Amino acid sequence: MTEAKEILHQILGVPGAIGTLVFSTEGAVLASDFPDHYSIGTIQNMVQLLSEDFLVQQALEGEGGGLDLRFNGGRVILRPVPKGAILALCNGSVNAQLMNLALLQAAHRLEKALPTAPPRKPPAVTVATTRSVVLGQLKQAFLGSIGPIGELLFSRVHADWSAGEDPRKLRDFVNLLAQELDDPSDRKRFLKEANAIIG
Image (tube, rainbow, N blue to C red; front, side, top):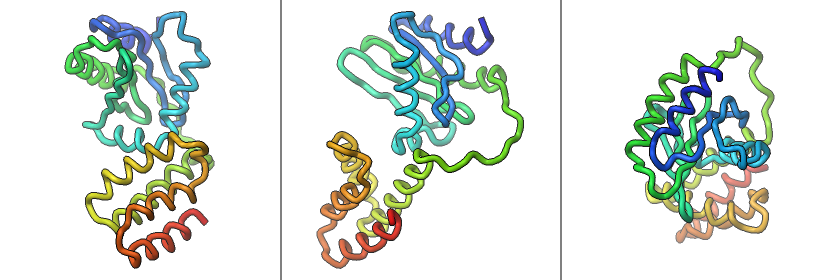
């Protein structure tokens, strides 16, 4: 068992823990300890979705970052690690404070256990990184038009749009954001700036 997998395995000692993994910001699974009935393909798809989501990446920023996703009968708890995140899949009865403490300790130990890649050329811009940058720019434009309440509105509109028919259409997202602006001049200014951002 590798040192990273050993660290992850210790997290499974927290009552309610089902599986755990650490992944890179690029969406690669670096180490994993999940029961065999969880297919590697399913785990990789989940990690890819999390690594590409702008709001997930934003929630994981900084040392105090983290995310607690609740669903029917369970939870997914994430904490940041350098250039990635550690994830725990848990049942609904898990003690979230205990799990967060275990993940925080594991994150510090994983800093030393995970291989550090030699310096390399900057990665090519991918659709996922471009999309994150564009969403960040749209958020700033929206906040400039509406003020501090825009944080909450942006997140709500983004969640609604992401769950829609085709979340790849940024223009639909821009139009949904514009509908939140009551002042016609603010709406017009935002649409002009947003259309310049998305091209």
